[in-house]
Length: 319
Ligand SMILES: Cc1ncc(C[n+]2csc(CCOP(=O)(O)OP(=O)(O)O)c2C)c(N)n1
Ligand SMILES: [Mg+2]
View 1 (cartoon, rainbow, N blue to C red):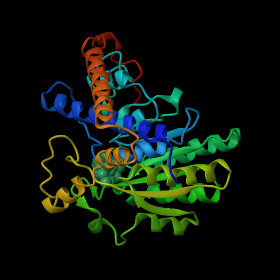
View 2 (spheres, protein in one colour):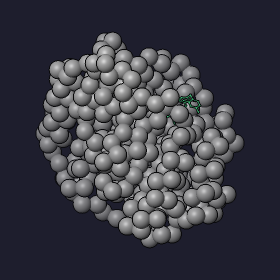
View 3 (cartoon, rainbow, N blue to C red):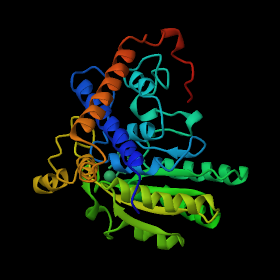
């Protein structure tokens, strides 16, 4: 299928915005200007972008500890997210959550999550709500290869299958769970094979090709909207940076890292746009410049925002 120029350019805008957000977060973290941990999505942009391009605000997503991109691709507000990273009162969680607790329920973004695999049953629950309401909405669960080994994965997929829930499980297989290579944590090459055990469709795709991601997600989401039940998509990808900022990634094979850097999803899409005469190099540069400006505005918003008051310390906190 040949995708329309505007759609491809939209993918590019989203992917570049994600990349620029992440690179800025890396820079701020290294400079000690944002507290806590940050796990960045650099190199994986095609997955969140290609999937979320099929969703509307009434659809739900669950995210992960590596979640900035999911929020951006689903239409969240980068100013509120940046302020949250800075721990400011204007942030998504009033500055008390940080990078791993960013949610925007009004947009169906049910939250990043520091608990690996926690989104899997949450997405099944959201999909059950969609099914009961009967309005054709769906849920999408983003999770990693490491999370595919959690009990929650098996429980959620089984339940989603037998109840025919409108949910799509999107495994972002970046080959590592922290420093643990996928082949050391499972005896199968393709996580998508696990779909067979639950009697649902499973596909393994090139997660650095945004068009392949978009098309696989379109099919799985359409199936879910038709009431035919869940699917599993495994998007093979690669994180360029460490597991968290500060991780020297000594466990990676330098040759493999180099090979994957050549498969960068943004460069690949840029190449495609140029070859198809859908954009000039100047137009692509101006998309990047625009993204940088938006990120700078988000940083200024965060910096100029107040800290939470001491008197608010126990508000919105549950134990
Ligand atoms: C239940 C649980 N177990 C362990 C951890 C520690 N932990 C944080 S991230 C991570 C690896 C996750 O790997 P993967 O699911 O592949 O996601 P990726 O970081 O590669 O995006 C682990 C083990 C955790 N946060 N939660
Ligand atoms: Mg992983």
